Amino acid sequence: MQPMPAHRRPKLSDAAGVSAGGGDDRLSALPDDLLIHILLKLQDAPVAARTSVLARRWRRVWALLPELHFPDGTDSDGIRAALAVHDAPAISLLSVAAIKATPESVAAWLPIDACRLSGVLDFRNRGTMDETSAASPLKLPCFQNATKVVLDLDSIGLTLPPSGIFTRLAELVLTSIHLHGPCSISDVVSSSRCPSLQRLVVSSVKGLDKFTIHSESLLELVLSGLPGLHQLNVVALALKDLAVRGCFTDALNRGQHIANISAPQLVTLDWKSSYDPSSVQLGEMAHLQQLTTQYLIVYGQYVFSAHNRHCLMLLQRFDHIRRLVLYLVYAPLQVNGRFLMEEMTNFPNITSLTLNVVACSHSFGASSFHVLSMSSGVRELEIRLVDLPSEHEALASVCQSGCICAEPSNWETKELVLHCLKEVVISGLRGTEHELAFVKRLFNWTTVLKRMTVNFRVSMTESKAKELRQQLLSFSRPRICMKFLQHGKACSFD
Ligand SMILES: *[C@@H]1O[C@H](CO)[C@@H](O)[C@H](O)[C@H]1NC(C)=O
Ligand SMILES: *[C@@H]1O[C@H](CO)[C@@H](O)[C@H](O)[C@H]1NC(C)=O
Ligand SMILES: *[C@@H]1O[C@H](CO)[C@@H](O)[C@H](O)[C@H]1NC(C)=O
Ligand SMILES: *[C@@H]1O[C@H](CO)[C@@H](O)[C@H](O)[C@H]1NC(C)=O
Image (tube, rainbow, N blue to C red):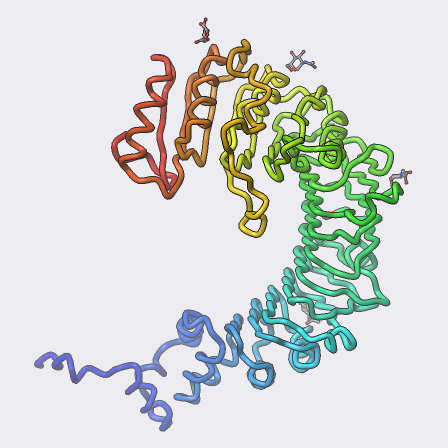
């Protein structure tokens, strides 16, 4: 038999057309699970539903899809209608990206699947909300079978279910939400109602002034952008990672007791918030390996010195930490400010140091020298040269001749021996004079350096990278292995 010419071969749409008429088509020969696989590839519930209009068989299969994606801007009537005809016994993923949703519109579909949701709910809303939505907040159903719930609501008001157990919930992410009573988040996330919770993220949530969690299962807790929080109690015996960023800002001046953390298995602590041993109680943390602290302002007046004190007091809390992550920030730079790093006199014993330097084109030699002179036992050093986040760019000041960043200048001549330092990684290098002067000195301070890896700025031209490489090699010594990367890959000339 002659092969069929290409233009006569049946297409998927032909087949679907036949099937719509109820004929025995080629698609019907496919088993249900293969059809489900094809529909899942469409990744988008309205498209899958439209496809299913083509064929009764497809529609039946669509209704069995375990994963439902409603892309950007699907209206809530569409979601409601789709969920109403959808009758898979369990939904493993329900993903909705709404635009300007209101609590009323979400309430039309969200409770439908509270029982059937056996996996992940990912609901994100975008677009400014009017004030009226705060008056009638969305009621979150109790998802007894869900394993993960992500809600990023762009300020929609939300109330939590006053009863019910989230039996299988392992991960809960709440972002940009305005929480309303009467049930508080503290009542929901502890082991009594969330016995499987392992990861909890609460970020930019309004209406949260006190938070208490008692959890036996929790492994990771992230609290960020909660300036109004003024009381935090954590009792989490299995907790490994804790991040508390941008919290307690409003409680700071009241001098009250703000936090009590009991997490004896903690491995990493990222505390970019106020800290004072009289108002924050960090229980025993014998297994702590990594500490990240609040930003340190390098030059400034009294208010910045007060700001830095939180970081310095936190450093004093620990004698020994494997890895320390610090931020040195050169903004805002005041003409009559002073070098605030001198107030840093105590340092834990560390083996690995990461310095995130936000230099805003200033020389960072003096501040880095000061930190390194107190970490003489360090074996690994990573220096990340980073920019101010764009929303703070206005704070950056220009480095002109006679700039305060030249002081104190002892780092240019004073001896420093980093007798354990074997490995250095520098990222974000642009190749400015200030940067090169520092790297040159850094070689001089090391005695057993084995390897230096330099990641050039992503925007750097190849010819500039070549030139810099020559310069850096000229500072190096024969036994040091130098590696140059750009975009995370070895430079082509390397
Ligand atoms: C939760 O899942 C279990 C097993 O997967 C099932 O037996 C139970 O009916 C589900 N619960 C609800 C409320 O759907
Ligand atoms: C902090 O919490 C621990 C453990 O729950 C408790 O024993 C201690 O009394 C609390 N401290 C304060 C000051 O509340
Ligand atoms: C720091 O740790 C090292 C190695 O564990 C030890 O030899 C040294 O004495 C410690 N220094 C201080 C000040 O605790
Ligand atoms: C560092 O520089 C001094 C002189 O400025 C020199 O004596 C010393 O040997 C240098 N050290 C290393 C490790 O290069």
